[in-house]
Image 1: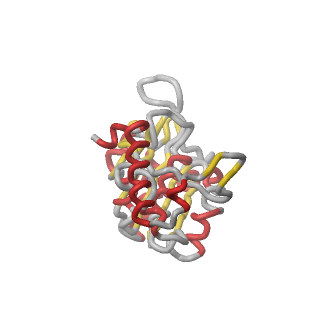
Image 2: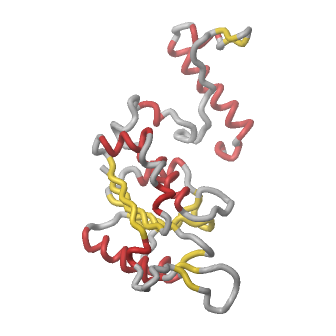
Image 3: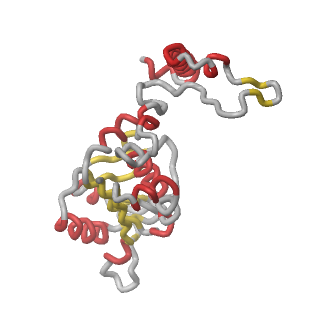
Length: 225
């Protein structure tokens, strides 16, 4: 089982992603635990504020170190963490290989920034890995955190009804997945390839590999390098 502890100033943004579909079922099965902490609960400010103006001037507000530090220290006193991950556009880009690696650990803490960013001392003192979901900027780290959790949890044995499904996803073999089809076999003259209806498993697997290679060459040739 993998436990996720997520620190955020907007816990409501994470309610829906974790309350439905695969992530919800994984929690009900006891295969993962996902806990969300409101950083305002760890602020000593009477207004429960978690941000302030940046030293040196400039636009935007910066999340203060204290709420993060208090919450992190409390959680670390309760258990050891394999990773403390900060979701940030300037982190290492999440890929399938990283998701595979993280699916083998037990306890992951995820820090979600907001506003202009977080005090650099949080990153220096506590963070073990900085991660991005792409070269663009979002309003905060909550949605990237949900994406990271989803990418990891679906790899836990027993989460998916067909355990081979995750192993055949795009990027697992550094290639994109082959095209997939289902009923009807003929829809208004648009037919499923005959090979998939043949029942010849070796030839079907050969076709799928060739299609995956072709698609990867056309769309993501960088993966083959």
